[in-house]
Image: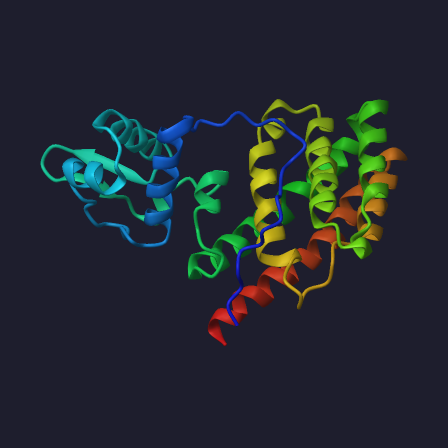
Length: 253
């Protein structure tokens, strides 16, 4: 059975600056982004000419050009005089960009790989972040992390509230490392969390988010036990890795 996109609004509690324009220009970016992500305009192919797209989309040339600039900035398009505008190979796309991920239909085969690989990134990054947070977090940050873990109640079925608490938990851990480079990985974590929810957590075949696992990490950070925090985060993310492997293997089954 194909997995259908959820209608639940997965809104994060954090303001992340969006490079997207507003109004008609944003709608145009979203439309073209979805067409590219879902292979209406496949990688390596030439998209229709400017006059054709202006007519199809019902927008001005200026709006279309602005949209193409945005999509080029996300790595999806490349323009050259000799051949027009071409869809770039997928390995040039910014797959850590929340928009690029969100433009894919949930049942697109590429989502399986994105889910598996973003989960792999989390298993590498977050245990180390948890260990650093245990040593460097402020008292306020320790409180936020612990409160977010305590707020998680998967049994209620309120996925939107669970997602917000999960975002607060993981992003605050990054901030608590007091490492500027780690802090800038916030968008990476928010994107991978969204992928995890849309293509893992909300699928009935999988277990819900582990409240106990989050509490173990939070309590280790609150207790300034770096090794315990790393171990608890690794154990918790191993569930995500199994979930991702299961989703990946469905494609081969």
